[in-house]
Image 1 (cartoon, helix red, strand yellow):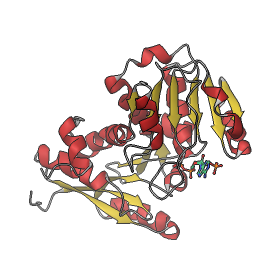
Image 2 (cartoon, rainbow, N blue to C red):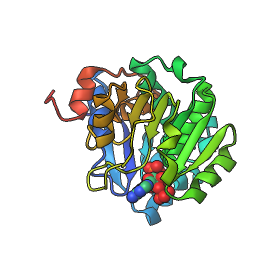
Image 3 (cartoon, helix red, strand yellow):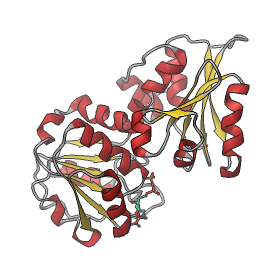
Length: 282
Ligand code: ATR
């Protein structure tokens, strides 16, 4: 729709940002709800992040999403942050307040839990171990969300052992660090397996993982969504495990930001999913 002079403007700040699906996602909701607003990609180099964030209120933006590689740096540039952002040490959503101050939030963990509980009964995972592969920013928000949700024990395996140990020490709680070459053993009795590494992403090597020890009732979630059908997802589906792909987390993490900026709590639907994945021209 065409914009008026009082249109609300938000966007996504990343470097690079051209592969982001967020403009397509928010654009769909803006159209669907007939909102006088826009959501734009903003390619901001790391050395310009502070200036770009300071400019948001001056340009009249209602807020922004923050993506790779800026989530941690943006955290340090906020006027205040919510509890999730404080625990994760990173920001993915900024709300510009009426006084022009910047509030940093982190909705990645919310998006993760919502995407899983959307079509799966997560309660069943609470008493059984959860296996997390990878110890980057995505792993951190997912672990914090799982702990808040009430899962018992977490087995954390990462190629760089020290990074997993540091994360365990910083987050605390029931987290066992498993060496990368023993990740297969960690699958025994697990009820949820999450790949948060970049392995399996287009242009990256596949995730090599024998699933034999994983119960066939365990949920398998790959946060990689490009491609949607990673080797892990295909292998898991072939042996009958319930699978959750990575797009759900992207769709659900976007809802709170949209609601704060544009005043509508948007829905995640199959049509939205198809649109974001480029399977529909609507
Ligand atoms: P994000 O913040 O999005 O989670 P990241 O911090 O770059 O991204 O983390 C990427 C994850 O993928 C890390 O856990 C990384 O392992 P290291 O900590 O050892 O770097 C993991 N990863 C990337 N390439 C990998 C590879 N070839 N083999 C195993 N793990 C890999």
